Length: 468
Image (cartoon, rainbow, N blue to C red; front, side, top):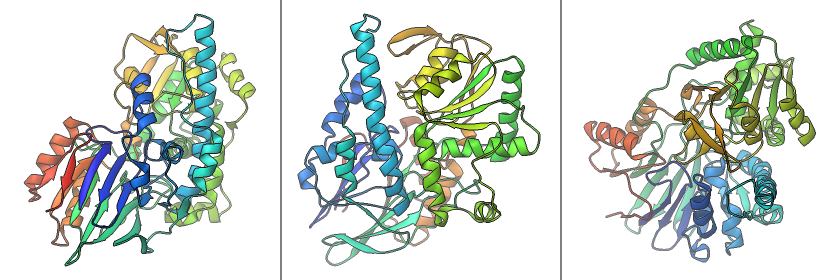
């Protein structure tokens, strides 16, 4: 068996890993690369994979950096099955269409700006459209957690709950290598324990090869209770000075977590009464998908729903779908909280809200998730004095607050614990760190080696690892 690391290798975006066995070739994830626009377009159009050589694709979850390039793979000739959990398939039906629409909308806006001489960006063409997504969805096969199926000659698949987002899965591949069977475990994005809404990650089986994410391999998250208190403090401070709080958010999970936290604060009287907007048609659709999959919820969330209360609704919260209503948010000069996609500020409606607010110091940008290098979100986190929005340089005068404690990614302690669980079966031969930057990977690698896991690597893009 050989594994090629095409994407999310020493970086946190564009997840793609190719597993080649004696009889089959399986692709783990097919995510969009997110970063500097010109670099992203080049990498996403080619993918670095031969679609016609693939026996099957296995998708860990619906986040765009893991699923967003699947329609491109389909356009390039892949006609085989894409295996995922039922919740992931339902989410992709909404998220990939939305990704296509965002690409088309941003392309129209940017190209119009170019035509008017108001932007120094290059002409933009969408990577795919809604028809490409529809064709891809016909190839997606939902597989429930803990059900073993054969997906290619000599390869059996089992999904375990990763606890990261709705439907997220730990992928277990049992690969027949003749005299023995190799258990390959791919975490996808691993969730945190004791977080609201979703179940905790499941324990891995006896593992020979562990491919593990490493986003936060060098740090620990603050308890979620501390994040709620800090969230209340930030909202109160900014609203008291008449400002708006812009929360760039992934439409899946992070938006629901922030709404859940705001609902809790409002119920306890810890947050001012101001309009709260979730400005994302996609989030409305995703919230509906949540209701279809109680198998993913923890016991507290199921009890809340059983009592007739929605975890994602409260007074003064408004879900915004129409463009006209979105524009009215920025036209209103009063204080407000605006949760909007995309999470890394690279596309979508959040760009319009940033354009309208970041040059006023009474406003704030609240960052609640990881920001990849070369993204607008990372530049905001770095407090660059000037940032480019829609190709135009603007002064960053708004307050910037970073709260990574809301992250749905496992922290260092969670990652080490998961690796030790995999090791406890007595078969672990290799640990491969992906979906992380070199700094955190170095720290985590040394920590795991200190725990007796000698063969720990962090491959770069295009590297291949042979199982010997």
